[in-house]
Length: 221
Ligand code: ZN
Image (cartoon, rainbow, N blue to C red):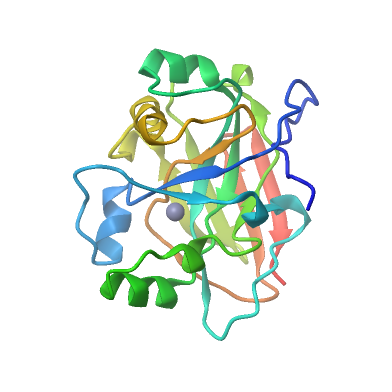
């Protein structure tokens, strides 16, 4: 397969493949509660492989499974420098783009595997499980890590994220991830989903926004 790349909207700078997408579960307390999960004491980190990456703008293709696929709308970070045991300052310097992602999830499979005490990769890391937008260059945003993002489905508001509500703020989160996995230039970090997750159906029209910088209309098939 060709390795996917994080696309920067101004065409600048990133010629590196996505070698992995590092994700966090339950980084917003209200989302943990809606699934009856305890709020974790440490970030619950997992990885999606390059084969999970798809282009969000061209449509979301649901996998052929006999169970519903859930959306989780998340702020995505494009990494531009190698990070290993990184400080929060290192993280500040290393993020070169901000975008949006859907962390697609087979919730029934995930719940079953969790109950059985097994890893839940097949519920989160399947082909196409990570539709990714193009990335807006980091310098086009204010230097803070405070961002708002949203998902509408068929015109109805479904999710609203405010990074101020994160249990682990972005610099601390990425620093923690880098203690476990070296992040390479081109890698992507998903920062967790706010409350409001639910099912996708073929034909759904999705609108995703990040501040007033990014607005994506896409459809589910
Ligand atoms: Zn997620």
